[in-house]
Image 1 (tube, chains in turn yellow, brown):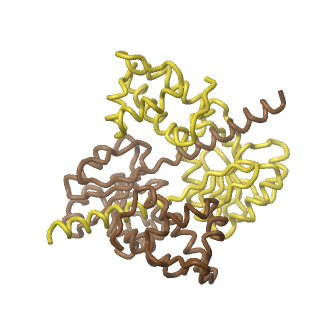
Image 2 (cartoon, one colour):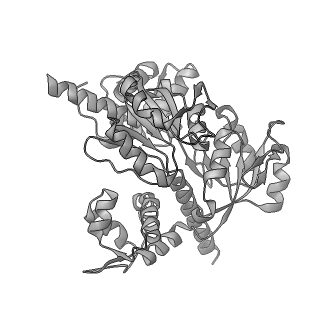
Image 3 (spheres, chains in turn yellow, purple):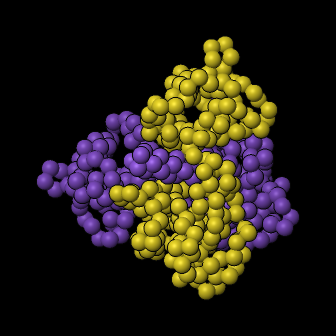
Length: 216
Length: 216
């Protein structure tokens, strides 16, 4: 696969991957772009266009080989690489994310959890004992994690990120309700759960406005 | 404001709202599109284009009035409407989301938390006592919540959603690792934390591939 895949296709790949994984689990061997489009609520032409980037898995009259396409997308996303990750901030969100996430099938291996609060250090989360944030430099020097998950309070985020960048961390998943900017050489995914809430609020109020107009 | 605002602008509004809220908190009264663009990492022309949809808050040589623009965006998003919401599934994610989320400034008012597990019913989460899911119909008939947050296990999601739709709920925020389809009259925001993880994996592997090529 030599073709350059566009950013917006890349953004949609995780969703294809999830649907293809579900299809694999339910034993589906092949699927037409029409069926996949109905399942995903996008147009069949969008699907053909997106998946054409990945070579010859779609065939006229046959559709897509689910397992092969899933493997190809996993390879492109680097899900088989097992990048090491540390999690900083073992509060509610940190514990939930560490416990609920299938890191290994998402490209990562969680190797350590840190917090600075004396009441939290030493407690158990998933298979980990929370370590003292004061010791993270030593841990990073020894283990060279590729990525850090930031589940620290909003006020602490920038200082922690700068700390970790100075220790060599170049990729971040940031949950901390304020954005970390993607500067030169630093990779960031900011997660904002409340954005979904606001979009939902917009959609509901739009519906209500429409209902009101319809009544008038 | 009579102009129809496009879907992609709407998708970006929560981010504008967050940045304007931070600016208000730090006492900033006005900001130029250039400053805002640097802060947000998008082009100034994108910002002017997006915010032009909302009337005369930007003035040549003055910039934007932060407080007025924030209020206008809040109104468009319906953040002042206080739509009532119930949360179903008081596991890790449910507890975390109920505890950490500032519902009232995001357009919602949480009015009840439900679970079906005997060990969880009756426990405290934030200011709520978890109620028995078996009693949710009665609660909905009495309180008419506008929205349900689904933090139930993947396997239970579809049945719970169908249940709640039959009881009159028309809007959902779904955290349950499998998608709820947006059917006629039903509003859905699916949240997939692992999609961010996969995108991050892609970005790291793309960087590594580039580094490898640069070395060759």
